[in-house]
Structure formats: C-alpha cells, structure tokens
Image 1 (cartoon, rainbow, N blue to C red):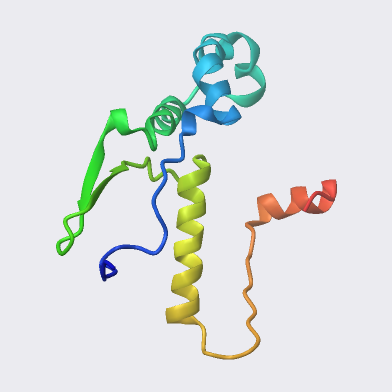
Image 2 (cartoon, rainbow, N blue to C red):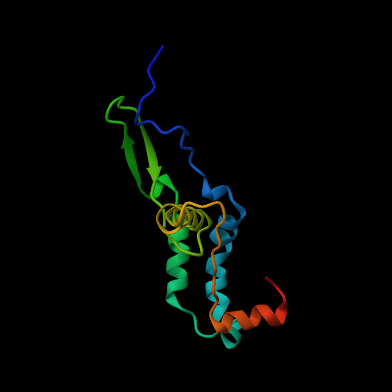
Length: 140
C-alpha cells in the first residue's frame, strides 16, 4: 500500500464554517442596527461609542472565511495540499482564536515554565476593580 507522508498531520483539517454559528448570525444580521441605535439607547449608560468595537466585529466576521483570504498548504514530499483560511487573531472576542491562543499558552506553560512534576498550581490574579465585582455579586 501507500506510505504515510511524514509531513501530513494526523488529523484532517475541516473548515469550521463560522457563518453557520448563532453568534456569527446575530452579529451579521443585527450589528449595523445596534451601531445605529447605540447613541440613543446605550450611550448614556455605557459611554461613547468606540470605533475599535466595529473594527473587532468586522475582523471577526471575516475570520475563517476562505473568500476573505487563505494560505495554500502543500506537503513538500507528497505534494498534497489544502486551503487554510486566515484568522482574525482576536483576543477575547472571537471564540476560535481565543481557544487557539489559550491552548498555545497552556502548552507553552507546560513545556517551558513548569517543572516536570505530578502536581501543578497556577495562580491568576484579578485587578482590584474586577475582583470587587466578583465578591459582591457572587458570580465566579
């Protein structure tokens, strides 16, 4: 039979089709209306509209879509190829990019920071302004 290519990943890449998710659908269909009504309905309570919000949402809507750009990945030995859609690399907003970033960070901590031992302990600290809201509401 055929030999296994040493460069081929074990798992097959499948496009995630972000346009089929509820989060994408809500933003795609309703974000323009939200922006239009922000000044009247939300500005008094939440403050002025920040342009970075529209930028982040636009990048999220383009994330993972082949029509917005892709890289062609080709194995040098077997010449098999596939398309990999560009990501937005958004931190904290895009669920896929945030998950990828947290996995990469965890792997970095495991390999480079922590000693090889049976028990590990990580300590996360919130800034004082955020911590007080957790204690008063009880939502952890």
